[in-house]
Image (tube, rainbow, N blue to C red):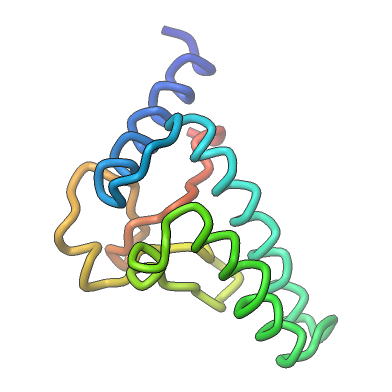
Length: 124
């Protein structure tokens, strides 16, 4: 198995784990790609906020507006409740909260033990 095949295998496994946890009907690779796009956009805004390139009001408007709407569209209201949005740009932005993360196994985690919704498998 080459590097690209391993990457897609890990993406598919991660997507299947999220699908099982959230109880949604979605293609695992497509789900991970959607989430990765959301992760990149949200993290870019967190970096901008830390650098003083956007205000707290702009950040909150994005988090409570388009980001929340997209996550609810994907996971539903109930699923959204278990999502934690990290404002620290040094790590991943979209995570499953700490309580729920403790219940899950075999999904990608950060050093704090949070399950990451959209990890970057291209670097491994």
